[in-house]
Image (cartoon, helix red, strand yellow):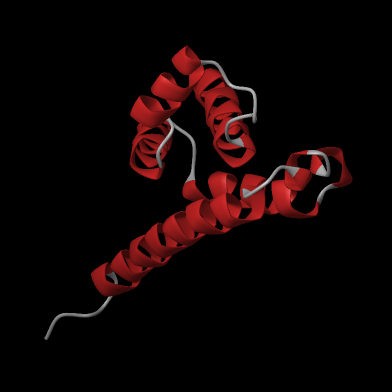
Length: 110
């Protein structure tokens, strides 16, 4: 089941970074408005994290999208880099918070 969530996380991130095409239908635009915003995408990825995907896997896949040549066509879409920066900032922040919690819990109590 974990493999399904990893694949779902990757597909969700690619779809979000890609965005809408210029010739999207009314139905695609309506669905994108309802389900394709940053809040809904983060909620779906957090659900995947709850079911076995790690935050580090999410961040490493975002780095893969940013740097790998197999995703070069994805980076050419209009606004894709802004969306990539937006989603990466959200998950880097959550990764920092989770690391802070681990450090805080290991702090000796007097």
